[in-house]
Image (cartoon, rainbow, N blue to C red):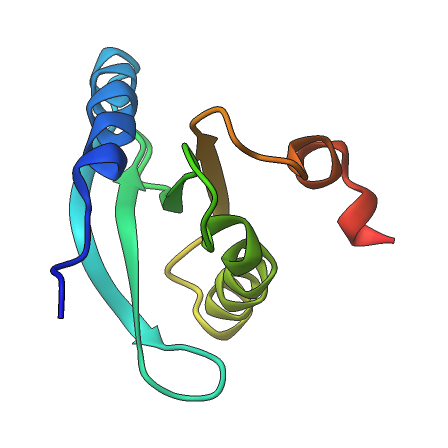
Length: 115
């Protein structure tokens, strides 16, 4: 079995983290925040904390070639929404899409998935 290729995801992380630091946010990486819908541990890429103490969940998704990241976004939306609903600790969540191969990018960022 081949180890999971994570270097492209690390590129996205390397772009996001300096922006957070510049905005005076602190963050923790790879944080277990509870259980996913359907079971299993839910880990988010980042838990970001504002200067006012607001905690924000961030999931980073990279799609540079054909793959499954795009298919995982709807499930991630559901899991993040449930994490916010079930905990008063987190106020909101973001999914950051990186890479150039998102065939559904406009669908995700345009809000059509909410209808």
